Length: 120
Image 1 (cartoon, rainbow, N blue to C red):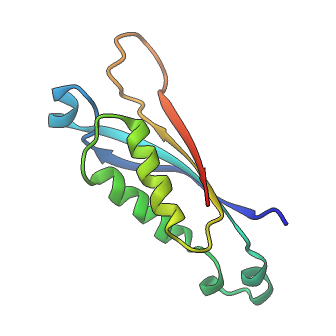
Image 2: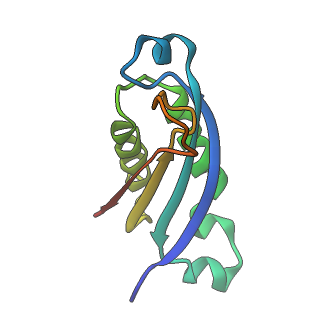
């Protein structure tokens, strides 16, 4: 059976990630898209939040990670988020996209993203 998907897009938080000193000093906004695969059938049958993943809890964890310990790469940040989601026993797999819309790229651009997928 293929697990169902809970998606939370556009989770915004301010962090101090990056390789440049200015990124560590001033920080910048990050946006995270989260897709977790789980089985929602028990929750749906009972119409009971306690039988599923509470997406408000997942989103809060993402914000805490983005606002937490700095790292050089958004690749590292994405893996940290994925690992935290997999710590929930009901999560079969996760797809995390970290957006860094104000990355110091040096040319006009609209977004920089890194996407990781992890599974048990």
